[in-house]
Length: 260
Image (cartoon, rainbow, N blue to C red; front, side, top):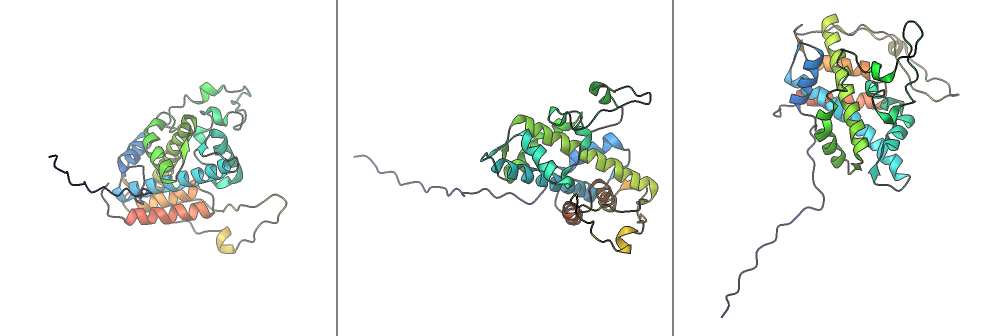
């Protein structure tokens, strides 16, 4: 007589995976990028803030590319979707050091001339000794894939490569500007940028908007802090919704006590 085995309880599998609201770009990666640019120490809150800004920017780019792909009834993102997203939203034109490196952007960056009026070949443009974010772009692949998944998107390898490069170049520029803020003791820029459509009157600016007071920096002159990341973000991003979301997310990340 065969014994009847009791039925094993089946595990319930959630239909949709939940993604924690944390940056896919870890603090260790942020610090590695900063070390390529500056010898200044980066505080943990500042590293989290920089990771948050990068996530916000990449999320906006991915969402714009998804909308472009959706108009063609496609689910997988391709480089053409990236170009469409940037073309439709000037706020997404970030990480421009990557543009000259990637085949996706060839023809969009224009011709570069040296001091004697001779065209500079593309391969020669990439040989700068300054960290450009291009060499270390591969470090962002895991984070980019996590971010794509969290947005319900998939992408061809060329698109992943471009997102890697933009993230790396953007964070490198952010690090460079944050270091400059520390060296100069604050943001010394005046003026503002407004976004508008051709043929439409520019939005009115108040005196406060047009002549902002330069921010004086507080803190250790050897350490990049959260406020320095916020200041660098205002330099890197146009005045618009993306900048406001990036700043809000960075402030929240800087206050977070989560483990790095």
